[in-house]
Image 1 (cartoon, rainbow, N blue to C red):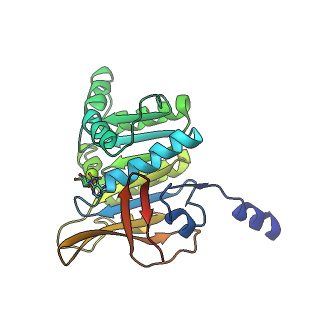
Image 2 (cartoon, rainbow, N blue to C red):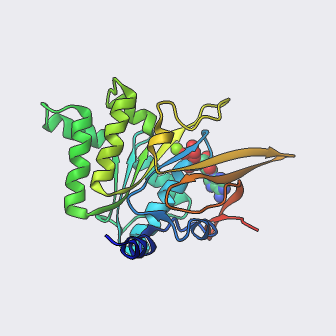
Length: 241
Ligand SMILES: Nc1ncnc2c1ncn2[C@@H]1O[C@H](COP(=O)(O)OP(=O)(O)O)[C@@H](O)[C@H]1O
Ligand SMILES: [Mg+2]
C-alpha cells in the first residue's frame, strides 16, 4: 500500500463511540475498532456501569451487536442495576445479549467433552456468526482467569487477546484493582492491551468524586490527565474544561 493509501486508511478508521460526553472528543471520536481495552479501577468505581453504557448506546443508536459477559453477578441482577441507572435493554435483543455463569454452565452440560474456556469461546463465536458482535465486555478478566483455569496466566491471556483481535471485536476487559495498589494488571495485560482506561475515586473534603484517565490508547492522541466523571439523567459526562 502507498503512503497516501495507508494515511487514508488511518484517517477513515472506524471508531466505537463511548457515548460519554467529553470522552469521545478526547479520543478523536472513540475507541479504534478492534482494540482490546482494559477498564481498570477499584471496587465501586462504576466500571460495570460505564462498560454497560458503551454497549447499550452502541446497540440502541447504531444497531451494533453487543455482548456483556457478566461473571461477577447474574444477568438478571446486572440488568436490574442498569435499569435503575436508566438503561433499559427491553427491545434491544437479540442485538444486545448478556452472558452469565449459569448460561455457560448450561452449555457446559450440553457439551460435556468441552472445557469451560472452550464453551465460552464457542458461545461468543456462534453469537458473532448470528448477531455480528461489534462490542464485547468481559466483567471481569480476573474471574475469567479463574473459571477458565488459566495455568500459565501470561500465555493464556496472550492467546485470549489474540483470539479477540482475530474476531475483530472491540472489547473492554474489566480488571479489579486492589485497594492499596496502583497496578492496572497482574500478568502483563497492560502491555498486551491496546488501551487502558482508569477509573479512580478520590476523597475531597466530605465528598468522594470519580475521576477518569485514558492512560493508554493506541492510534490516538489523547490527554493523560484525570478528569471528573459524572453520571446523571443525561448519562456519563467527562468534565474537561
Ligand atoms: N449517579 C450515580 N453517580 C455515582 N454513583 C452511582 C450513581 N448511580 C449509582 N451509583 C453507584 O455506583 C456504584 C458502583 O457501580 P458499579 O458499576 O457496579 O461499579 P464497579 O463495577 O466498579 O464495582 C454502585 O454502588 C451504584 O449504586
Ligand atoms: Mg463491577
